[in-house]
Image 1: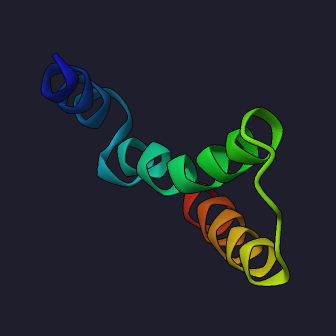
Image 2: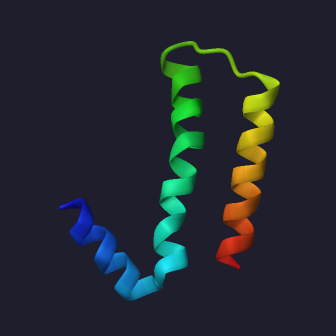
Length: 61
């Protein structure tokens, strides 16, 4: 089912846009971990998330 969704996204939006959710997933997991599991947000995590989100922003322009 997931591959069908991925291939449909590639067909409609292109490969670059279809790959963007894969890059945002670790950031979303870290945020959910902080809120749900009370995990600690560290400086390296914030720096990494900033780099990832900047890359996603630049790739989607």
